[in-house]
Amino acid sequence: MTDFSIEKSIEGPVIGLDEVGRGPLAGPVVSCGCLFNSYDNLPKNIKITDSKKHTPKQRKKLFSLFKKLQEEKIIEFHLGLASVNEIDEFNILEATKISMKRVLDKFNNSNSSIIIDGNFSLNYKNIYEKSLISGDKISISIAAASIIAKVHRDRLMSLYDRKFRVYGWKKNSGYGTKQHINAIYENGITAQHRKTFEPIKSLSKKI
Image (cartoon, rainbow, N blue to C red; front, side):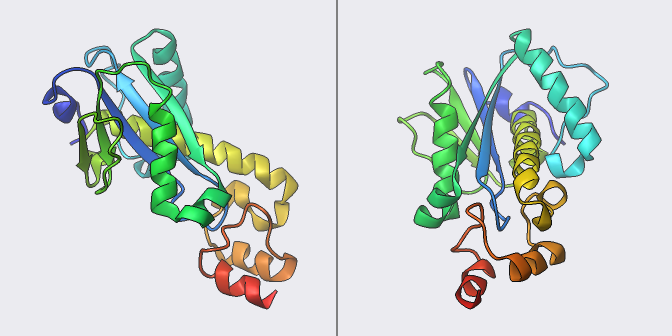
């Protein structure tokens, strides 16, 4: 069940962290951190869980809610990303950590703890952290972060799609669909493609 049980078990403010975009063949990895200043002011009829469990329409509606809650100081959230070049240089896990640390740099609350969706550590400024496998299914803070990151990254890939329409990024968000891979064979690789990812790595040698 997705609720605030994890957050309430930790003393003080808690930032939930999640990322979107570790698997695609193109585009950056985007992370979001979400801190709820109150655990009691969410609309009772709103369901918040893993972003993949929501439809695009539901995610956009929740994103609008989170923006409203941020204006009302009920939550605070920030975004950070790591570029394609950083993914290729450092690998996707290290790039994910870079994007998450960029998120945390935007928070001014030094007393916060961190809960992370995944099974890795950030070792960020000696702040207490807890890694949670499938954390977006049990923590509302992490789930909210996953939704915000997903909406932001999808919008970013839609912008890239305007320049590189043949790859279908508006629909596939850079993932390796058949259309996307066929378009790579037919049109080559762009600056937004991850050169260290298969089949890009092998395809780039043939093109």
